[in-house]
Amino acid sequence: MSKVQEIIQEIRELQSDDLQKVLKEILAQMDRLQIAKKSLDQFAGTGKGVWGSDAQNHVDSLRSKDRV
Image (cartoon, rainbow, N blue to C red; front, top):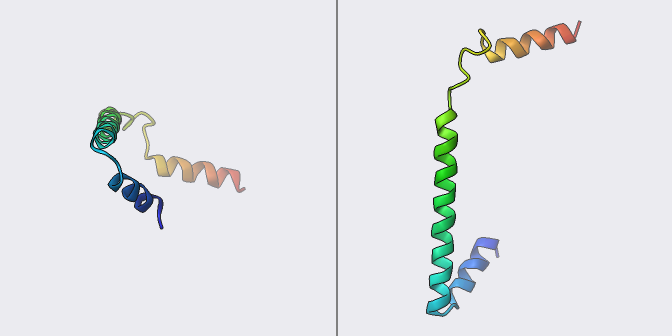
C-alpha cells in the first residue's frame, strides 16, 4: 500500500473534530504552496537578456574551451 493510500485509510477512521483539523492543515499547506508558486512566477523571465547571449550557447562555449 502506498503512503497516500495509508493516509487516506487513516483519514477514513478519524472522528469529525480530527477531520476538521486535517482539512485545515491541508488547506493551509495548499495556500502556502500557491503563495510560493506565485512568488516564483513573478521572477520567471526576469534574467532574460542579462548575459547578452543565449544561455545554452554560453554553456556550449565554456564546454568547448574546457575540452581543448
